[in-house]
Every structure is written in C-alpha cells, then in structure tokens.
Image (cartoon, rainbow, N blue to C red; front, side, top):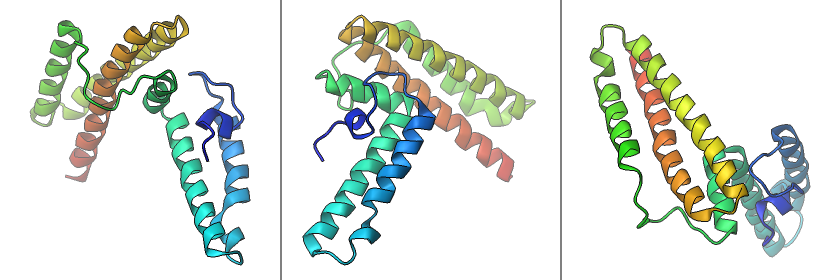
Length: 174
C-alpha cells in the first residue's frame, strides 16, 4: 500500500493521464481487491483488503481531478499545498477572484440569473484551463515555486466553480 498512485495504476507519472486507461485499471484493481473476495479469510486479511480498496479509491479520485492531480505531483516532489502557505499570490489575481465572487453573490438578483451564471462559469472554466496549462509548463520546467503558486490559484478557481454549481442548483430548485 506504499506505492504511489501512478505506480498503483501502472501509469507514467505526469499531469496528463489517460482517463479511459485509468478507469480500466481501476476496475481491474477493484475486482482483484474487493473486500467480498476476502470474506472467507482472516480478519486481518479482510481488513487489509478494505484498506487497500480505500487506497485505490483515493488514488482514483486524486488522478481524476486536475487540481488534486497537480497537488499530488507537487507532493511527490516534496511540496505540500494542503496547508497554509507563506507564498503571496498575485494581488491582481486575488482582486479578480473577489470581483467574481461579488458577481456570484449578486447573480440571483441579476436581470437574467442564468445568463450571469453562464458567463461566470465560462470565465471560471477559461481561467481553469489557463492555470492548468501554466501548471504543466512550470512543473515540466521543475519550477516548483511557480507550480505551487499556480496550484494555489487553481484552488480558488475550483472553489468558485463549485460555488457556481451550487447556486445554479439552488436557482433551479426554486
């Protein structure tokens, strides 16, 4: 259970992951390690199967998510982006994020809330694509400081995307 997630799925370490191949290898590992296959064995072996299955599920979730995959690559390189960072983010980026969040907060009162949410989603999606490209470029050049700052920006944009989805769901429920 100490193999890294790329080794677990027999994939080349890197940001680009063949999602179809990942899913195929996930299904094979799930079949091999499903706890039901260990029901007749000892308590210890059953517990290990459950733990290994949890490890497989966590690995899949990490490699499927662009943000989590970028964070994991940095973790493998010795950088943990889950805690607080002393790294200062670009003030212009932070200001843009504040403006987008203000627009999101006001979206339900907008003349056309759906159009406003579509525009916000498009802006967030575009920002995410640009940041992912930036991460790949910086990480490939071994600029870990730059890649770490980019992941921190990705965290903001990913959270904004989730907030847009939540508001859209609430508006559709009304």
